[in-house]
Image (tube, rainbow, N blue to C red; front, side, top):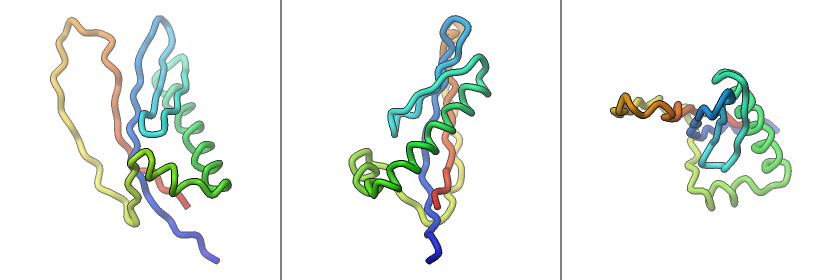
Length: 104
C-alpha cells in the first residue's frame, strides 16, 4: 500500500551563545546545537526527522500533532516571509525560519 505524503510547517530558531549555535523547533520542543548556523540547523533537522519517524512507528503522530496544534497539509504550503525590525543593539536575536516538511 502506498503511503500518503503529508506536509507540516515547523519553525526553526537558532541562537548564538558564546561560540556555539543552539537550534530549537518550538512546535515539537526539540533542540540541537552546532559550531555554525548550518551545522546547528542540519543537526536539528536530523533530530526532527528521527522524532517524526519514531512517532509514526509508534502510531502516536495524530495524537501528538493534535496536542501541539500542528496542521497537516495534503499539498506543499507556500512559504511565507515575515519581516521584523530588530534594534542594532540587540546582537543575540535568533535566526528564525519556517519550512514545510514532507512526511511520507
